Image (cartoon, rainbow, N blue to C red; front, side):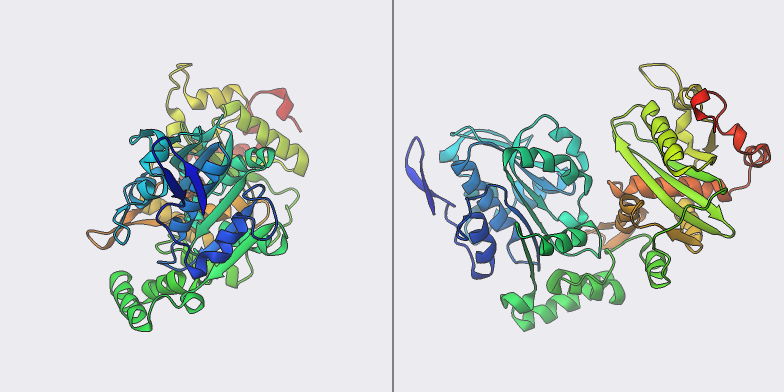
Length: 463
């Protein structure tokens, strides 16, 4: 225990909390029991079953670090709305108090902002609960420690953004989650198992023994009733036995991607010379813009590349297209963009399609489609699709994580997918699937015109 003197009394941090036996290895790793410096340069990923106490140990580790090493700390959930329910307002019945109040007692606080879910401690440390869906809000903050809760459902780009900050500060990161298929979280586990400076752990109910068998039978029965036999059984295996074999619960394209995997169609792809490369876009304003690069080879679609970014002007994406064309020596075909490309920008009064045309790109505007029609178009397309898992890693993660929203009160899946970080890549592919398949006069005309029509101006596009 770390004892710290407050202005009023001496209290222990962690406060009124005891590390459980199955949490001890993780707890000791961060506390330097292995002989290394406490917290500095630590990286850990833990896959653990439901009721393991993942957030409990993580928030108390953060409290210890914040009192030992004054600095800025962030606790991230997949969505910022989840952070409030899962941690900020979460009540610990056994210890009779809110989890955050128990971990950060008011005696060590200087200031609390409930709306922002922000705490400043008396030693200057700050702690804030955030969502990985809005990781750009972390810009400019110099973090020493970060927890990613439910990492398997979080935006992997949030770690790409934060890791240089922690590297410079010799800070630490902890990823806690249950499995959601073999996605970015599983890849991180594989990396952690081969890197000596990482701590990794997969902890099932068989490993801990903290949930009696009779309780497990009840849990399995209730989950199957709630989600159905197939999805319920898969969810039970994920939640209690840390199975990586099942897709994400409610994943829109789970079956289609399993077929691709089984048939070996997720593999390294050769870029076919002479075959035009089409693009499918999802345009972001305050969030990400995503672009798929696709070749139509015979009756098959080859997803050969993917790009996504946020906060960049349209000219940035034109530069990306140009750089990829030069690097891979391909030629472009058609560029399919969603109907909102016609929207006008407030700062320029120009529509985005006018801006793109001024930059040399001639878009194919895909009319608005009902979301279910777009999903079905992508499903049809995936029946004949091959995906390069290296160049399309981020896009493939989007397709795997694109999922329907579950309504707890009604106990039903909504008819519409959840809008989160994964929806940008999924929507970009839907733009292509609906535009390339859908018959239209403009589409036919551009096919007859050929490649020269795709870039009407800007001499740097010339082959």
